[in-house]
Amino acid sequence: MLGRSATSLGRADLLNAAGYLQFLGAFSLLLLTLRMVEKSSQKRKSRVQRLGSGDYW
Image (cartoon, rainbow, N blue to C red; front, side, top):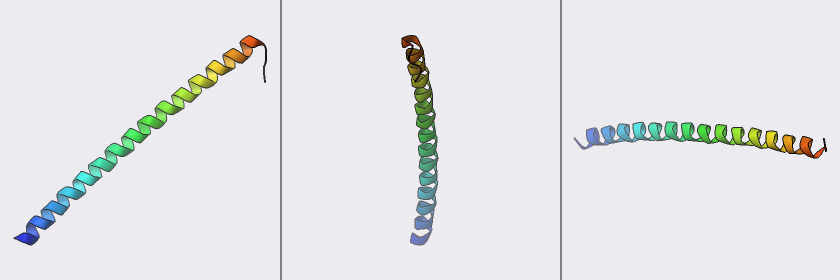
């Protein structure tokens, strides 16, 4: 009886941990894409500013 409840609890914990890890991975991927988009937009802005000032380097 006790062993059965322990195994079912362990299985539920494993499923919970797997779901949490999946959520964490998706969240970090979302943050990474947002950061990459932000960096590219910043590069574009700085390039436009440099071209506008006449300094290409």
